[in-house]
Length: 147
Ligand SMILES: [Zn+2]
Image 1 (cartoon, rainbow, N blue to C red):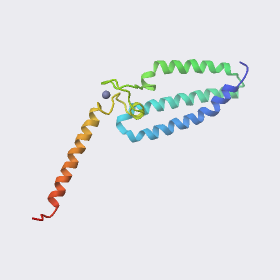
Image 2 (cartoon, rainbow, N blue to C red):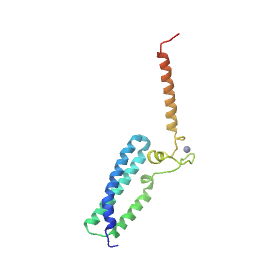
Image 3 (cartoon, helix red, strand yellow):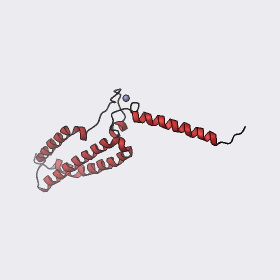
């Protein structure tokens, strides 16, 4: 491994990956307090991508070869392994019923629950129903009586 092909690739494209990851945290913001952990996870991933990019850039500046990237790969895998609860907090199935969750549920919501078992969501729809009913009743009161 005398080449710098992988170093060049990492130094160049991990920068764009880093920007894409930062952009993702902005998209996640609309899920507010229900996805704080998921947002932090993407931020940690972005930091990791950034550090690998910086390391690759330093290797490139010092004319070192691809073999030195193995160190970064090992360290990155160790960080991912020991920090997996923070960096990769993803579950594909609902904790209550075991059903496969939607992409949105997996990547945006902290609780590993499908929409049927997310208590907050159920409460919200019930609340919305109640509000709609109230508004309808008020509308009828406001209408002038035709009789
Ligand atoms: Zn469920």
